[in-house]
Image (cartoon, rainbow, N blue to C red; front, side, top):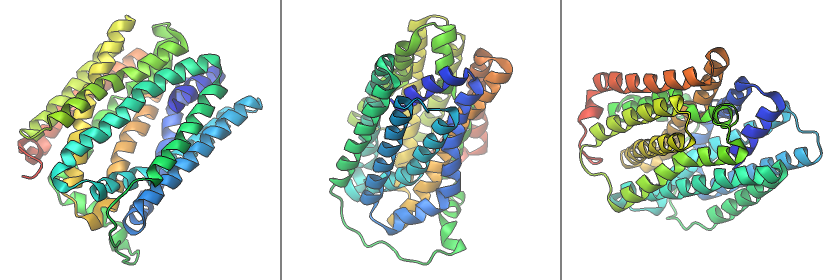
Amino acid sequence: MLGVAVGWQLYEITGSALDLGLVGLVQFAPMVLLTLVVGHVADRYDRRLIATGCQVVEAAAAAALAAGTLGHWQSKTGILVLVALVGSARAFSNPATTALISDVVPRAHIARAMAWVVSANQAAQVAGPALGGFLFALGPVAAYATASALFGAAGVCAALIRSRRRERAREPATLATVFSGAAFILHRPVLLGTMSLDLFAVLLGGATALLPIYARDILSVGPSGLGLLRSAPAVGALATSVFLARYPLERRIGATLFRAVMVFGAATVVFGISRNFTLSLAALAVLGAADVVSVVIRASLVQIRTPDAMRGRVSAVHSLFTGTSNQLGAFESGLVAALLGAVPAVLLGGLGTIAVAALWMVLFPELRRIRSFEE
């Protein structure tokens, strides 16, 4: 909901594709700067409380966006600063929340649990953007105020989670411990391959950052249509994640990952050339379905193959990879769209994603051959 409102309002103020890309960049920068810090925090302190505090910060940022709009002092700079604050909160929240899963769910059920986690997230992404688009039609204040209230509710829910209490390591923050999460991943080709594949594939395939342009200038469907376009990937992802929760992946994990990334790239190409609203929605739904397969595989591998004492730091590096691909990918799409146009940017991104998947099959044969999570 917040993404729809920010994207549409910023594009109304500036009319610039590059500014839409800047929304991704200002969320990406805090993640890079804070990665090494947040990993230590997640390994040393109560992950539940970290998640709660981050939701409160995001609620405050959404409330400030509502206040700025209501007071008629909203500006491009103000929007980007508040979006950066949201990005900072998520930099802490993502690794803490991901590592918290292993405190709640037994190891044998982590793959299925990850599918349910993704299902819950995608259900929110189905309802959120669509509702955000309709609320924005009533006024941006309605969208921002509702988002703020829901962030607050998420904070309450996080505080009520019951988890197994574990003694957190209190090792001193040295260079070795700070970089230990990255070192752990670098020495495990399967984890390095999955994370870097997501980084480069989604970096190139960031079509969703340009949805305001498609909604207004290409498909002519307005803010309500933008909400539906933003929801379409989540619809496909939700259906797929529910299926994976019921029938978890157990065989040919590596091959399935590469197929999913290639389907993601192909769906991006179809969306890029489409001028039909229904076909565009279908392409985005397939894109979301393929993406969620990759997400479940990557997240399950990280949780299962990382010891608890390291999960915060490894999850922080993992969040950096995913944040880099999503947020920097949005900036890349905006930059290319500003230079070449929205349609060439999306087409090049989809084809690039397919090429990256093919290259990674050669560079990481261990990942291609992996058969099960526990192998």
